[in-house]
Image (cartoon, rainbow, N blue to C red; front, side, top):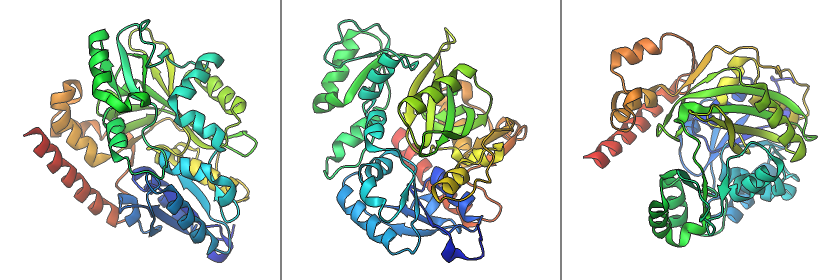
Length: 406
C-alpha cells in the first residue's frame, strides 16, 4: 500500500465519533489512510487531526436521509470508502441498506438478517437458549409467572435506525438499560411505569456482579466468517458501576471455553466484520454468561493495536483487499485502556454515592494509575486538540451532574 499516493488508497469513513470512533480514526489516519469522521453532531472524535468531519442526518430518526446522503458522499470518491460503524444505529442502517451501499462503498458490517438477530435481544436470547450459547435465562414479558427473582429488566434494543420521531421510546430504553427487580410487586410497578414501551423490554436472570465482572472478546471475521483477529480483556471500572460503559479496561487472558463459544457463534451465524462478545462472570457461582454481542466496533477497541492485534487495521486491510500486515494473535496482556478525565471524576466524586468501593482520593487515584502501561483515550502524542476538547466535554458533563444532584 503506497501511502504517498492518497488517490490510490481506499478512504475510511467512521461513524459515531466518540472515543471508540476516535481511536479508529487515529490508528488509520496516522498510517496515511484518508479518513472521514461522519456524525450527526460534533462529538470528540470529529476534532481529530487525522480525519475530516462530515455532518450527516441522524439514522436514529432519519434513516432514509442518512442512507441517501452516505450513498452520494461515497459515490463522489474514485475508490470505494471502507465504512466502519461504532454503535448500533449506524451499523443497523448500513447493514439494512448494504446491497445498495456496496455499489459505492465497502461496508464493514454483517448481513441484515444476522444483525437483526443480534441487536434485537429477544431474538438473540431465544437463539442463545436453543443453541446453548451460554446466554442467561430470559422470560417473555407476558409470561412472568415462572420468574425466579432477582431478575433484571433491560431493553430489547437501545437504538436502531428508523424513519420515525419517537424520541420518547429511545430515551426510556436508554435510561432503563438495566433495572434490578426483586419480587413480583416490583416487577408489576416497573411494567406499569414502562407503559406502552413494555413491549420493548425483556426480563432476564440476574447475573451477580458489577461492571468489573464483564469480559470482552473482540473479533474481526472476514467475508467467509473466518476469524482474522481476536482480542481478550475485561472491564476494571464502568460507569454506572453496575452496568455502565467501560471507563477503565485491561487486556487479559480468558478461559478457553469463552473463545470456543465465540468461534462457534461466528461460524454458525456466519458473522462477518468487527464485533464484541461480552461475557459476565457471576460473583457467587463463578459461571460465565454471554450477555450480548455488539455487531460493530466497541468502546475501547483503541487498546487492540497496543496488544499486538490491531483490529481496526486488520479490518480495513481485509475490506480494502490489501495484504494483511496486522498481527492476528494477541501477544501483550499488560495494557490498560483508560478514559482519564472521566475515571478521575468518577472515582473522586461520583462513585462516593453510587459505589463507595471504587471511590478514592486524588493521591490514591494518581498512585493507582502509575502502576500499569496505559492507553489513554483522550491523549495521543500528535493529536493535540483532543485533550482540550475532552476537558470541555467533561467539564460540561460534570456541571450537569452537579446540577442534577443538588
